[in-house]
Image 1 (cartoon, rainbow, N blue to C red):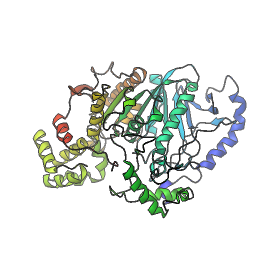
Image 2 (image 1 turned 180 degrees about the horizontal axis):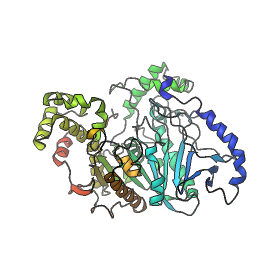
Image 3 (image 1 turned 90 degrees about the vertical axis):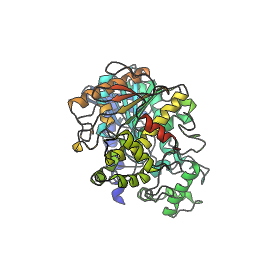
Amino acid sequence: MNGLIAGASNNDLTRRSVLTLTGAALIARSRTALADPAQPVVHTSKGAVVGLSDGGVCVFKGLRYGQTTRATRFRAPRPAPVLATPVVAQQFGPACPQTLAEEAVSEDCLFLNIWTPEARRGGHRPVLVYIHGGEYSHGSGSSPLYDGALLAQEQDVVVLTLNHRLGILGHLALNRIDMGERARAGNAGLLDLILALNWVRDEIAAFGGDPACVTLFGQSGGGAKIASLMAMPAAHGLFHRAVTMSGQQVTASGPLAAERRARAVLEHLNIAPDNLAALDQHPVEALIEASLTLDPTLGGPVYFGPVVDGVDLPRHPFFPDAAPASLSIPMIIGGTRDEVRIFFRDEWDRISAYGWDQMTTRLARELRLDCDPRQVTALYRRLRPFATPEEVFYAAITDSRSWRGGVMEAQARAQAGAPAFVYQVNFESPLSQGRLKACHMIDIPLMFGTTATPGALCGNGEDARSLSRRLRDMLGRFARTGNPDGPGLPDWPPYELDRRSTLALETTPRLINDPRAEERRFFAAYPFIQRGTI
């Protein structure tokens, strides 16, 4: 169990020690108008922070935006306190405790990171806030793939990443069990994001940013979190543009389904529903272990995600329509052509050996909708007569799940008269002997310009670098104007139902209308309920 959240024990002590040893020595410098250029100082309403300079970009890591969540476990977060001593903001803060953690973790995890071309007021630069993926249960804002230095310097923007509560700590729905202070636990992770956006509104001007020009962008779970925020009243007005990359949230967890999951976790922990105070006493390791409880509906580890609680999230994000309060926010909705290939990498050889009957049988449990898989196979064999069973397997799963969710969001925006710009990544990864194709996560390094970073699925070839430059320019334009179209791209109109214009991101981007039209119409005949809703 300790291996689940390795690194948690010494993190808080290390951070406090660093602040104690260095804070007093920095007080004098923090009050001086001309600080050391290598360690820029910014004065916020919470106190002075000391960053570092990296290649002409000012970097501030581990800035606290909220108090430790240990004190607010399963409750709404509290803003960071005002500190008299300057804070050395030169190391990433810990991530939220989670299964399979790859870095230091702590319940004291409400930290953010900033890259800015100039750490002073008056810059009025667009602000790009990246929300990490990993569904709602994993990840952090400190991955090297999310390094904002190039975007900040090249596009003259302020880039921000952050950590927030995840999994059981961020989405244990107790609102139907405890109507008191734990009633907001089901959306605590999203409330953390709203607190961070309030921090941006109040403080980002001191770092050269414009609080009236904030763009959220996020991949996978990060995109889903953005879609959820678009339906949350408390987030209204805190961001002004949105980019979702392979991350959809058409429907959220229903209250009864979320309650069933919470009760399963409480039973695993041997906590009676009338004794929720016991949750505060459990070691965080025990809580993380309990998150592996069997989901009462889905099987596998219990699902954690946003909950339609009637208060913080009063409705589904994109059902029965796009949340009306979000329609004034320009939006880009993107995905990749071969999303799911990477999720089956441990089975690549087995799946490549499937015949048509084996593949069709496996489709029955992977499509996540109640349709006849034989009809699915017949459709794809007709449309793609030279495709192998393996190719049909990945295409059908992608089209029926993640791609379909993005299409539904784009349709909802178009029907409401606030169409989004839609893209599809066709650029293929050169890694793994080409078996990844245009897979999930390939667009992260393309968007950040971190193509040379280990783990970048796009590789660092000339084609990847060229496409990355186009996407960075696109993101900068969108952050400034709300329209991503411009040099380096074909004419890219918003997604309307008559054309369904989609930008195909390839070595040379091109516009296509209504991609996979027959597949779209086929799957549209079956109800779509996002995983975790019931």
